[in-house]
Length: 197
Image 1 (tube, helix red, strand yellow):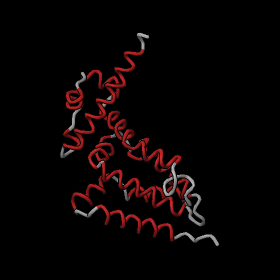
Image 2: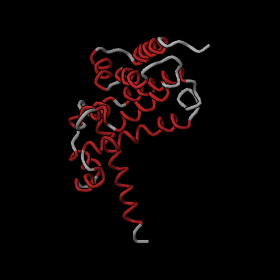
Image 3: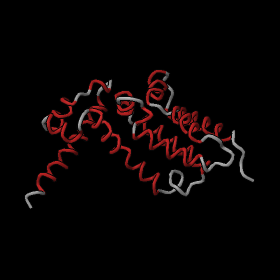
Image 4: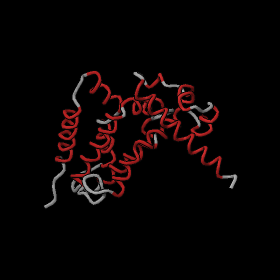
């Protein structure tokens, strides 16, 4: 029995840290303004607890990203159309990219911090590899489409956090207009491959 208390405390601390980080990223103008010390103070935990639980700032960002992404992940893996696996590929690809775009619009600062703050290539990041792998697999089911790997990279480039930030913040393109532009772009890419029949 005594073993359970630290586990409950650790789980409670983790939730407090994620909630504090979530609130801080939502309030601060720049993702760089959020430090590990800020998160620890807001969560009411020591910095040592924070580093033990998440390793570093990038680890905290990944954990927060994964927590926010969980409902989408579940919909993609086992949900109904248009995100779920039973959706025809020509319908699923635009829905997947729309989900990525909406997630990044809803989580602009977090997405920016995650994509800018990693060490090494952003294309080697776990979240990117997961989306790329999923899109590539769905694109492989589109008849006549060649080079699904490159096409998946090209489509995901349209949802990069820095581009989303530029379009939403710099060019002030409204959310629905951006979604429509992405849908038209994806439709054009998919239309370049012949349909079955």
